[in-house]
Image 1: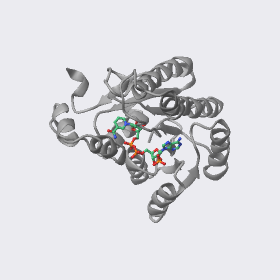
Image 2: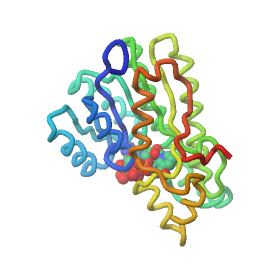
Image 3: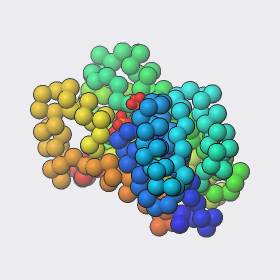
Length: 253
Ligand code: NAP
């Protein structure tokens, strides 16, 4: 399905909610084994149990992606239980608090960078070592339209998502000769609990978001899952180091 080595197992972080959950379902429906990773034990277990009912191998692993020891243990645990990974979607992220650059606190800045950038890097590092050893693999990191353009009011989030693209391009170049591809997906506004929190913080937030999207609507998590599935498939065998906007045209302007 995915590569000459018939990749069949994917690790997905932040799989208990939103985009990660929809992506876990997408891969599961294609017959993949899925390691669902989340720091939220209840959401993550529930999502894994729902998929496991259909008989495919779906297991939950609790992990805070910003914690080095957690991430090191994660790869060991997933390998022991599922026999390793052929693909990974580093998707876990937080939005943090809103406020202009001059109002952003150091705590807020550090928290967002710890999860969205350090967390992606910690997972990426562990996955690359694993994949280099086995001689193949494909990784998709979750950036954002905020990784491609500036956005007033969310400076740390924007910095973290720009950083994810830098990590993606660098890892892609470092591992291009090792049969490992590394790409990023850059979602626009997608209907998830995170976006709901963001939109509900201002009056008329939903309408403003819909108006921002050139297509005039908010995207579905399944539309990101489709892009991630394509990037992980052999159909994208010559695509590496790319940051793919899936954003209803947001960054076209
Ligand atoms: P979501 O519904 O809030 O889901 C994110 C999941 O990640 C939650 O289950 C969350 O658990 C988990 N998570 C947070 N911090 C974690 C950590 N340190 N370790 C492990 N898991 C952690 O958000 P989403 O909208 O699906 O977002 C998924 C990704 O897409 C994020 O990277 C986000 O920045 C990106 N994105 C989203 C949009 C959008 O419009 N929705 C647009 C562009 C990019 P908790 O519930 O405990 O926090």
